[in-house]
Length: 125
Image (cartoon, rainbow, N blue to C red):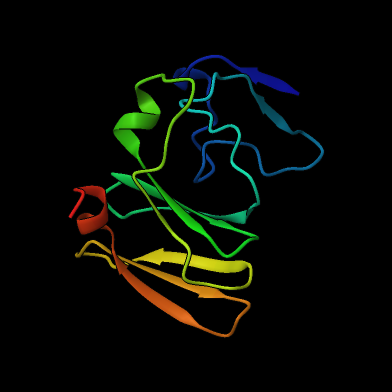
């Protein structure tokens, strides 16, 4: 296994710059840019907006939390969500962002999709 410490050491032959050969795995030893702790009921759904300004996390309890990138990168120990939506009654299966507008789309096990304007919630409107 190869330990990568800088961008110059990354294999440029693969799209991600990492070995795709299971016989020769690549270990990347890099500090995370942000860590989000103490988030109850988080499921396996997370997505950044197309401009990278916010990240939405879908939870098993039906909640969706939206975090601002600037808050995550500020190095705070307890990053609070900019807004939380609790409109679903079952686990969130998918989240996605409109490519040009501040619209978050969520899909849940409760057989519903919801559309949220996260710019209003984040600005306190």
